[in-house]
Image (cartoon, rainbow, N blue to C red; front, side, top):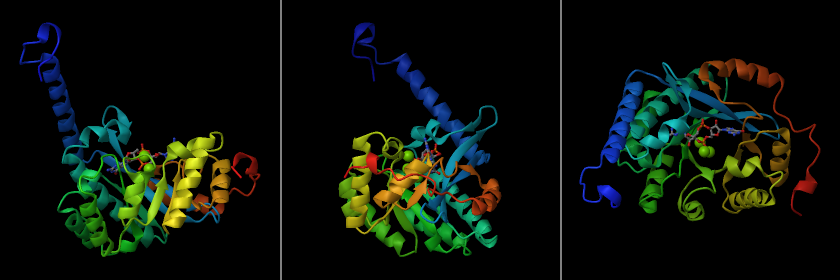
Length: 296
Ligand code: C2E
Ligand code: MG
Ligand code: MG
Ligand code: MG
C-alpha cells in the first residue's frame, strides 16, 4: 500500500514495501530450496516420567542445517512460513522423517513414542487426514499409538468444530493429540472443551519461573488441575532443573521435558544418549521438597 503520510502520500508505488515483499519472496525461495536439497534436520528431545525416570517419548524439533550459517533454529524461519503452504510441505517431511527414525529406534529395542509438531494451517487443510494416513501406511512397522501430534495454536482456528471433527477422525487411525504451549494461545480454555486432545502441554514460559513467581506457579497448578478435571494427561516443558521436576511432581505433573533432563539432540545421537541415560536416569530424589515455594 502507498504510504499515507509525508512526501509519499500520493505515491501508489512504495519502494520500501516493494523491497520488503522482494526480501520475503527471496527468503521463501531459499527455504523451498532447502527442503528440496534436504537441508532440514530433526533433533529429538526426550520426554520422561519424572517419578520413575522412565523414557516415554521424544519430540521431533526441526532445524535448518544451513551450508554457511550452520544450524538455524526453527524460530528463525518457521514464523515466515506460517501463512504459506510451504509449512504444509515441511510438516509432511517432518512426519515422514520422524516415523523413519522412530521405526529404527523401535527396531533397536528402544520403546518410545514420537511427538510431532503440526502447524495449525496444515491441520485445517482438507487433506490433512489423508496425508497422515499415507505417512502411517508408509511406515507399517510403527504402531499409530506410538505417534502423538502436538497442535500448535499459533493462529486461532477458523472453524474449531471442523478441527475437532478432523481430530476425532484422526483418532480413529490410532494417533493421539496434545495441545502444545497450553495457556499461551488464543482460546485455550474453550479449545480444551471442544478438542479431543489427550494431553495438555504446559508452556515453558510458565514453568521457567514457577519456583520464584507465584503467578506462574498458580498457572501451572491451574493447568494441572484442569488436566485432572478434564481427564487429560499433562506434561511440562522447560524442566530446566531437578527443583522444577520436584515441584512439578509435587503438584501432580509426572511427565516432563526440558534442558534439565536432556537437550534436543540429533537423531543419530539418540541411542547412545539412551544407553547413558538408562544408567543415570533423571531423578529428583536428592532434591529437598519445596513446600515453601508452593501455595498452600
Ligand atoms: P515447541 O513445540 O513448544 O518446542 C519446545 C521448544 O522449547 C523447543 O525449541 C525446545 O528446544 C525448547 N526447550 C525445550 N526444553 C527447554 C528448556 O528446558 N529451556 C528452554 N529455554 N527451552 C527449552 P525449538 O526446537 O527452538 O522449537 C521452537 C518451536 O518451533 C517449537 O516449540 C514449535 O512451535 C516449532 N517447531 C519445532 N519443530 C517443528 C516442526 O517440525 N514443525 C512445526 N510445524 N513446528 C515446529
Ligand atoms: Mg511442541
Ligand atoms: Mg511447546
Ligand atoms: Mg513453544
